[in-house]
Length: 403
Image 1: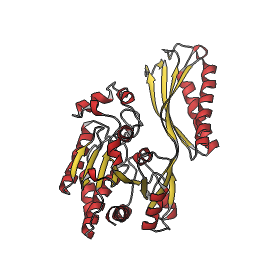
Image 2: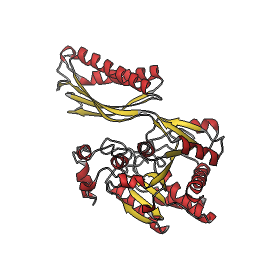
Image 3: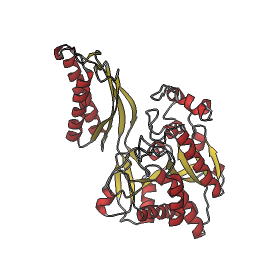
Image 4: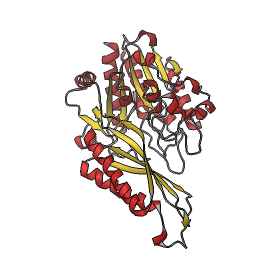
Protein backbone atom coordinates (compact mmCIF):
# COMPACT_ATOMS: atom_id res chain seq x y z
CA UNK A 1 0.00 0.00 0.00
CA UNK A 2 2.79 2.42 0.87
CA UNK A 3 4.50 1.92 -2.49
CA UNK A 4 1.25 2.45 -4.39
CA UNK A 5 0.47 5.63 -2.48
CA UNK A 6 3.91 7.14 -2.99
CA UNK A 7 4.01 6.23 -6.69
CA UNK A 8 0.78 8.14 -7.24
CA UNK A 9 1.98 11.02 -5.09
CA UNK A 10 5.19 11.37 -7.11
CA UNK A 11 3.26 11.41 -10.40
CA UNK A 12 0.77 14.05 -9.22
CA UNK A 13 3.11 16.31 -7.27
CA UNK A 14 4.74 18.19 -10.21
CA UNK A 15 1.42 19.17 -11.84
CA UNK A 16 0.61 22.85 -11.53
CA UNK A 17 3.51 23.55 -9.21
CA UNK A 18 5.15 26.99 -9.28
CA UNK A 19 8.92 26.87 -9.50
CA UNK A 20 9.09 30.31 -7.90
CA UNK A 21 7.02 29.67 -4.78
CA UNK A 22 7.02 25.89 -4.51
CA UNK A 23 3.24 26.11 -4.11
CA UNK A 24 0.45 25.10 -6.47
CA UNK A 25 -1.61 27.10 -8.94
CA UNK A 26 -4.18 24.53 -10.01
CA UNK A 27 -7.04 26.86 -10.89
CA UNK A 28 -10.35 25.72 -12.36
CA UNK A 29 -10.52 25.17 -16.11
CA UNK A 30 -6.86 26.01 -16.75
CA UNK A 31 -4.06 23.96 -18.26
CA UNK A 32 -2.95 22.81 -14.79
CA UNK A 33 -6.52 21.72 -14.05
CA UNK A 34 -6.62 19.77 -17.31
CA UNK A 35 -3.38 18.00 -16.37
CA UNK A 36 -4.86 17.00 -13.01
CA UNK A 37 -8.03 15.76 -14.69
CA UNK A 38 -5.98 13.65 -17.08
CA UNK A 39 -4.03 12.24 -14.13
CA UNK A 40 -7.32 11.27 -12.45
CA UNK A 41 -8.56 9.55 -15.59
CA UNK A 42 -5.31 7.63 -16.04
CA UNK A 43 -5.35 6.43 -12.42
CA UNK A 44 -8.96 5.32 -12.75
CA UNK A 45 -8.45 3.53 -16.05
CA UNK A 46 -5.35 1.77 -14.70
CA UNK A 47 -7.67 0.29 -12.05
CA UNK A 48 -10.31 -0.70 -14.62
CA UNK A 49 -12.81 1.85 -13.33
CA UNK A 50 -15.44 3.50 -15.53
CA UNK A 51 -14.74 7.23 -15.76
CA UNK A 52 -17.29 9.94 -16.45
CA UNK A 53 -17.47 13.71 -16.14
CA UNK A 54 -20.85 14.99 -14.97
CA UNK A 55 -22.68 18.05 -16.26
CA UNK A 56 -20.88 20.30 -13.74
CA UNK A 57 -17.35 19.15 -14.49
CA UNK A 58 -16.93 16.76 -11.56
CA UNK A 59 -15.08 13.54 -12.38
CA UNK A 60 -16.34 10.13 -11.22
CA UNK A 61 -14.55 6.78 -11.35
CA UNK A 62 -16.95 3.87 -10.80
CA UNK A 63 -16.51 0.32 -9.62
CA UNK A 64 -19.87 -1.37 -10.16
CA UNK A 65 -23.09 -0.08 -11.67
CA UNK A 66 -23.88 3.55 -10.72
CA UNK A 67 -27.54 2.99 -11.53
CA UNK A 68 -27.78 0.34 -8.81
CA UNK A 69 -27.90 3.12 -6.20
CA UNK A 70 -26.84 3.18 -2.55
CA UNK A 71 -23.25 3.75 -3.69
CA UNK A 72 -20.35 4.45 -1.36
CA UNK A 73 -18.35 7.46 -2.63
CA UNK A 74 -15.01 8.83 -1.54
CA UNK A 75 -12.57 11.39 -2.89
CA UNK A 76 -11.98 15.14 -2.69
CA UNK A 77 -10.58 17.74 -5.11
CA UNK A 78 -7.36 18.46 -7.04
CA UNK A 79 -7.51 22.24 -7.48
CA UNK A 80 -5.67 24.64 -5.19
CA UNK A 81 -5.66 28.08 -3.66
CA UNK A 82 -3.00 30.47 -5.03
CA UNK A 83 0.38 28.95 -4.13
CA UNK A 84 -1.35 26.34 -1.99
CA UNK A 85 0.10 23.20 -0.47
CA UNK A 86 0.34 19.72 -1.92
CA UNK A 87 -2.04 17.97 0.49
CA UNK A 88 -5.25 20.04 0.64
CA UNK A 89 -7.58 18.08 -1.64
CA UNK A 90 -5.11 15.80 -3.46
CA UNK A 91 -4.44 13.74 -0.33
CA UNK A 92 -8.10 12.68 -0.35
CA UNK A 93 -8.06 11.69 -4.02
CA UNK A 94 -4.75 9.81 -3.86
CA UNK A 95 -5.84 8.08 -0.65
CA UNK A 96 -9.11 7.01 -2.28
CA UNK A 97 -7.29 5.19 -5.10
CA UNK A 98 -4.79 3.72 -2.63
CA UNK A 99 -7.62 2.52 -0.36
CA UNK A 100 -9.22 0.74 -3.31
CA UNK A 101 -5.89 -0.94 -4.05
CA UNK A 102 -5.70 -2.01 -0.41
CA UNK A 103 -9.21 -3.49 -0.47
CA UNK A 104 -8.42 -5.44 -3.61
CA UNK A 105 -5.24 -6.71 -1.97
CA UNK A 106 -7.38 -7.89 0.93
CA UNK A 107 -9.63 -9.76 -1.50
CA UNK A 108 -12.64 -7.68 -0.52
CA UNK A 109 -15.92 -8.40 -2.29
CA UNK A 110 -18.07 -5.34 -2.98
CA UNK A 111 -21.81 -5.51 -2.36
CA UNK A 112 -22.42 -1.84 -3.13
CA UNK A 113 -21.11 0.31 -6.00
CA UNK A 114 -18.01 2.32 -5.15
CA UNK A 115 -17.01 5.64 -6.70
CA UNK A 116 -14.00 7.92 -6.40
CA UNK A 117 -14.72 11.57 -7.17
CA UNK A 118 -12.71 14.65 -8.05
CA UNK A 119 -14.92 17.67 -7.43
CA UNK A 120 -14.22 20.68 -9.63
CA UNK A 121 -13.30 24.18 -8.41
CA UNK A 122 -13.49 23.43 -4.69
CA UNK A 123 -11.16 26.22 -3.62
CA UNK A 124 -12.77 29.00 -5.62
CA UNK A 125 -9.36 30.50 -6.40
CA UNK A 126 -10.30 31.64 -9.89
CA UNK A 127 -13.94 32.72 -9.67
CA UNK A 128 -14.17 33.64 -5.98
CA UNK A 129 -16.77 31.06 -4.91
CA UNK A 130 -15.75 27.85 -3.14
CA UNK A 131 -17.11 24.38 -3.93
CA UNK A 132 -18.59 25.35 -7.31
CA UNK A 133 -18.79 21.75 -8.58
CA UNK A 134 -20.59 20.37 -5.54
CA UNK A 135 -22.74 23.51 -5.12
CA UNK A 136 -23.98 23.16 -8.70
CA UNK A 137 -24.67 19.44 -8.31
CA UNK A 138 -26.62 19.96 -5.09
CA UNK A 139 -28.58 22.93 -6.43
CA UNK A 140 -27.04 25.38 -3.96
CA UNK A 141 -25.63 27.38 -6.87
CA UNK A 142 -28.03 28.23 -9.68
CA UNK A 143 -27.05 28.29 -13.32
CA UNK A 144 -27.86 32.01 -13.46
CA UNK A 145 -25.52 32.83 -10.57
CA UNK A 146 -22.82 30.53 -11.93
CA UNK A 147 -22.94 32.30 -15.28
CA UNK A 148 -22.32 35.62 -13.50
CA UNK A 149 -19.03 34.44 -11.97
CA UNK A 150 -15.93 36.09 -13.47
CA UNK A 151 -12.21 35.76 -12.85
CA UNK A 152 -9.76 38.64 -12.40
CA UNK A 153 -9.35 38.95 -16.18
CA UNK A 154 -13.09 39.22 -16.79
CA UNK A 155 -13.48 35.69 -18.16
CA UNK A 156 -16.82 34.22 -17.15
CA UNK A 157 -17.21 30.71 -15.77
CA UNK A 158 -19.08 29.46 -18.89
CA UNK A 159 -16.40 30.95 -21.15
CA UNK A 160 -13.67 29.18 -19.17
CA UNK A 161 -15.57 25.87 -19.20
CA UNK A 162 -16.18 26.08 -22.94
CA UNK A 163 -12.52 26.91 -23.61
CA UNK A 164 -11.59 23.78 -21.67
CA UNK A 165 -13.93 21.64 -23.76
CA UNK A 166 -16.87 21.38 -21.36
CA UNK A 167 -20.44 22.33 -22.29
CA UNK A 168 -21.56 25.14 -19.93
CA UNK A 169 -25.17 24.87 -21.08
CA UNK A 170 -25.47 21.57 -19.22
CA UNK A 171 -24.55 22.81 -15.74
CA UNK A 172 -27.08 22.73 -12.93
CA UNK A 173 -28.62 20.65 -10.16
CA UNK A 174 -28.08 16.91 -10.49
CA UNK A 175 -30.50 15.27 -8.04
CA UNK A 176 -30.59 11.95 -9.88
CA UNK A 177 -26.84 11.51 -9.43
CA UNK A 178 -26.91 12.44 -5.76
CA UNK A 179 -29.83 10.06 -5.19
CA UNK A 180 -27.52 7.18 -6.19
CA UNK A 181 -25.18 7.91 -3.28
CA UNK A 182 -25.75 6.11 0.01
CA UNK A 183 -22.71 7.55 1.80
CA UNK A 184 -19.87 9.97 1.05
CA UNK A 185 -16.63 9.86 3.05
CA UNK A 186 -13.98 12.50 2.37
CA UNK A 187 -10.43 12.17 3.69
CA UNK A 188 -8.56 15.44 4.13
CA UNK A 189 -5.37 16.70 5.69
CA UNK A 190 -6.20 18.48 8.93
CA UNK A 191 -6.00 22.26 8.61
CA UNK A 192 -4.97 22.83 12.18
CA UNK A 193 -3.00 21.12 14.97
CA UNK A 194 -5.66 19.30 16.98
CA UNK A 195 -4.36 15.85 16.02
CA UNK A 196 -0.76 16.86 16.54
CA UNK A 197 -1.63 17.97 20.06
CA UNK A 198 -3.40 14.68 20.87
CA UNK A 199 -0.73 12.56 19.18
CA UNK A 200 -3.18 10.82 16.82
CA UNK A 201 -2.54 10.15 13.14
CA UNK A 202 -6.22 10.11 12.13
CA UNK A 203 -9.36 11.82 13.39
CA UNK A 204 -13.07 11.98 12.56
CA UNK A 205 -14.90 15.22 11.76
CA UNK A 206 -17.89 16.21 13.87
CA UNK A 207 -18.98 19.41 12.13
CA UNK A 208 -17.93 22.32 9.93
CA UNK A 209 -18.20 25.79 11.43
CA UNK A 210 -20.57 28.26 9.76
CA UNK A 211 -18.55 30.50 7.47
CA UNK A 212 -18.77 32.92 4.57
CA UNK A 213 -17.11 35.51 2.38
CA UNK A 214 -18.04 39.19 2.23
CA UNK A 215 -16.76 41.76 -0.29
CA UNK A 216 -16.14 45.27 1.02
CA UNK A 217 -15.99 48.06 -1.58
CA UNK A 218 -14.47 51.28 -0.21
CA UNK A 219 -14.90 54.12 -2.74
CA UNK A 220 -13.00 57.38 -2.33
CA UNK A 221 -11.36 59.87 -4.66
CA UNK A 222 -8.26 59.32 -6.76
CA UNK A 223 -5.70 62.11 -6.48
CA UNK A 224 -2.01 62.90 -6.59
CA UNK A 225 -0.04 61.34 -3.73
CA UNK A 226 2.52 64.15 -3.69
CA UNK A 227 0.38 67.28 -4.00
CA UNK A 228 -2.88 66.52 -2.17
CA UNK A 229 -2.98 67.74 1.43
CA UNK A 230 -3.81 65.08 4.01
CA UNK A 231 -6.82 67.11 5.10
CA UNK A 232 -8.18 67.16 1.53
CA UNK A 233 -7.95 63.44 0.90
CA UNK A 234 -10.74 60.87 0.61
CA UNK A 235 -8.42 57.88 0.87
CA UNK A 236 -10.28 54.53 1.01
CA UNK A 237 -7.09 52.72 1.98
CA UNK A 238 -7.27 54.25 5.45
CA UNK A 239 -10.81 52.95 5.99
CA UNK A 240 -9.84 49.56 4.65
CA UNK A 241 -6.84 49.36 7.00
CA UNK A 242 -8.95 50.30 10.01
CA UNK A 243 -11.51 47.67 9.01
CA UNK A 244 -8.82 44.98 8.85
CA UNK A 245 -7.88 45.78 12.45
CA UNK A 246 -11.55 45.79 13.43
CA UNK A 247 -11.96 42.28 12.00
CA UNK A 248 -9.16 41.03 14.23
CA UNK A 249 -10.70 42.66 17.30
CA UNK A 250 -14.19 41.34 16.63
CA UNK A 251 -12.88 37.83 16.02
CA UNK A 252 -10.95 37.83 19.28
CA UNK A 253 -14.00 39.00 21.22
CA UNK A 254 -16.18 36.23 19.75
CA UNK A 255 -13.61 33.43 19.91
CA UNK A 256 -13.83 33.20 16.12
CA UNK A 257 -11.55 33.84 13.13
CA UNK A 258 -11.78 36.61 10.54
CA UNK A 259 -9.37 37.42 7.74
CA UNK A 260 -9.01 40.01 4.99
CA UNK A 261 -6.78 37.96 2.71
CA UNK A 262 -7.48 39.43 -0.72
CA UNK A 263 -7.42 43.03 -1.90
CA UNK A 264 -7.84 44.90 -5.19
CA UNK A 265 -6.88 48.56 -5.56
CA UNK A 266 -7.74 51.10 -8.27
CA UNK A 267 -5.90 52.73 -9.94
CA UNK A 268 -3.16 50.82 -8.10
CA UNK A 269 -0.40 53.36 -8.64
CA UNK A 270 2.48 54.04 -6.26
CA UNK A 271 2.01 57.80 -6.56
CA UNK A 272 -1.80 57.81 -6.63
CA UNK A 273 -4.33 57.97 -3.84
CA UNK A 274 -6.73 55.08 -4.56
CA UNK A 275 -10.21 55.70 -5.87
CA UNK A 276 -11.36 52.23 -4.81
CA UNK A 277 -10.14 49.58 -2.40
CA UNK A 278 -11.94 46.26 -2.55
CA UNK A 279 -11.26 43.73 0.20
CA UNK A 280 -12.65 40.29 0.87
CA UNK A 281 -13.50 39.18 4.40
CA UNK A 282 -13.47 35.50 5.34
CA UNK A 283 -15.17 34.89 8.69
CA UNK A 284 -15.78 31.60 10.56
CA UNK A 285 -17.02 30.69 14.02
CA UNK A 286 -18.04 27.66 16.04
CA UNK A 287 -21.69 28.73 16.10
CA UNK A 288 -24.04 31.04 14.21
CA UNK A 289 -24.44 33.64 16.97
CA UNK A 290 -20.68 34.13 17.17
CA UNK A 291 -20.37 34.45 13.40
CA UNK A 292 -23.20 36.99 13.30
CA UNK A 293 -21.51 38.99 16.06
CA UNK A 294 -18.25 39.12 14.12
CA UNK A 295 -19.71 40.09 10.75
CA UNK A 296 -22.09 42.68 12.25
CA UNK A 297 -19.27 44.16 14.32
CA UNK A 298 -16.90 44.43 11.36
CA UNK A 299 -19.50 46.06 9.15
CA UNK A 300 -20.52 48.54 11.85
CA UNK A 301 -16.91 49.54 12.41
CA UNK A 302 -16.28 49.85 8.67
CA UNK A 303 -19.29 52.12 8.21
CA UNK A 304 -18.24 54.32 11.13
CA UNK A 305 -14.73 54.68 9.67
CA UNK A 306 -16.16 55.33 6.18
CA UNK A 307 -18.40 58.13 7.47
CA UNK A 308 -15.45 59.71 9.27
CA UNK A 309 -13.27 59.75 6.13
CA UNK A 310 -15.93 60.58 3.54
CA UNK A 311 -15.81 57.12 1.97
CA UNK A 312 -18.70 55.31 0.29
CA UNK A 313 -19.03 51.69 1.42
CA UNK A 314 -20.86 48.74 -0.11
CA UNK A 315 -20.84 45.28 1.51
CA UNK A 316 -21.83 42.22 -0.52
CA UNK A 317 -22.14 38.69 0.87
CA UNK A 318 -20.59 36.50 -1.84
CA UNK A 319 -20.98 33.12 -0.16
CA UNK A 320 -22.28 31.61 3.04
CA UNK A 321 -22.43 28.11 4.50
CA UNK A 322 -24.35 27.42 7.73
CA UNK A 323 -23.04 25.04 10.38
CA UNK A 324 -22.76 21.49 9.04
CA UNK A 325 -23.29 18.61 11.41
CA UNK A 326 -22.15 15.44 9.68
CA UNK A 327 -24.42 12.41 9.78
CA UNK A 328 -24.36 11.18 13.38
CA UNK A 329 -25.17 7.65 12.24
CA UNK A 330 -22.28 7.58 9.78
CA UNK A 331 -19.95 9.32 12.23
CA UNK A 332 -20.77 6.73 14.90
CA UNK A 333 -20.11 3.96 12.38
CA UNK A 334 -16.68 5.41 11.62
CA UNK A 335 -15.94 5.54 15.35
CA UNK A 336 -16.97 1.91 15.72
CA UNK A 337 -14.75 0.83 12.81
CA UNK A 338 -11.71 2.89 13.78
CA UNK A 339 -12.09 2.60 17.53
CA UNK A 340 -13.84 4.76 20.09
CA UNK A 341 -10.55 6.41 21.05
CA UNK A 342 -10.25 7.99 17.60
CA UNK A 343 -10.56 11.76 18.17
CA UNK A 344 -13.69 13.53 16.95
CA UNK A 345 -13.10 17.19 16.10
CA UNK A 346 -14.75 20.15 14.46
CA UNK A 347 -13.18 22.30 11.75
CA UNK A 348 -13.38 25.84 10.49
CA UNK A 349 -12.57 24.81 6.91
CA UNK A 350 -15.24 24.25 4.26
CA UNK A 351 -15.33 21.08 2.16
CA UNK A 352 -17.39 19.42 -0.57
CA UNK A 353 -18.56 16.97 2.11
CA UNK A 354 -20.18 19.89 3.89
CA UNK A 355 -22.01 21.00 0.74
CA UNK A 356 -23.28 17.48 0.02
CA UNK A 357 -24.39 16.85 3.60
CA UNK A 358 -27.81 18.40 2.95
CA UNK A 359 -28.58 15.70 0.38
CA UNK A 360 -26.32 12.75 1.22
CA UNK A 361 -25.10 11.11 4.47
CA UNK A 362 -21.53 12.40 4.74
CA UNK A 363 -18.51 11.97 6.98
CA UNK A 364 -14.88 13.09 7.01
CA UNK A 365 -11.55 11.71 8.13
CA UNK A 366 -8.62 13.98 8.96
CA UNK A 367 -4.92 13.10 8.69
CA UNK A 368 -2.52 14.77 11.12
CA UNK A 369 -0.77 17.95 10.03
CA UNK A 370 2.29 18.38 12.28
CA UNK A 371 2.58 22.14 11.80
CA UNK A 372 -1.09 23.00 11.33
CA UNK A 373 -0.10 25.11 8.31
CA UNK A 374 -2.44 24.90 5.30
CA UNK A 375 -3.13 26.90 2.12
CA UNK A 376 0.64 27.35 1.96
CA UNK A 377 3.61 25.56 0.39
CA UNK A 378 4.61 24.65 3.97
CA UNK A 379 1.55 22.40 4.36
CA UNK A 380 2.73 18.94 5.38
CA UNK A 381 1.81 15.43 6.49
CA UNK A 382 4.20 12.65 7.44
CA UNK A 383 4.45 9.57 5.21
CA UNK A 384 3.46 7.23 8.04
CA UNK A 385 0.41 9.35 8.81
CA UNK A 386 -0.66 9.36 5.17
CA UNK A 387 -0.43 5.57 5.08
CA UNK A 388 -2.40 5.41 8.34
CA UNK A 389 -5.04 7.57 6.68
CA UNK A 390 -5.24 5.23 3.69
CA UNK A 391 -5.60 2.25 6.00
CA UNK A 392 -8.35 3.98 7.99
CA UNK A 393 -10.20 4.94 4.81
CA UNK A 394 -9.89 1.36 3.51
CA UNK A 395 -11.32 0.02 6.77
CA UNK A 396 -14.26 2.41 6.53
CA UNK A 397 -14.94 1.63 2.87
CA UNK A 398 -14.72 -2.10 3.54
CA UNK A 399 -17.29 -1.75 6.31
CA UNK A 400 -19.65 0.38 4.20
CA UNK A 401 -19.30 -1.24 0.78
CA UNK A 402 -18.28 -4.83 1.40
CA UNK A 403 -20.15 -6.07 4.49
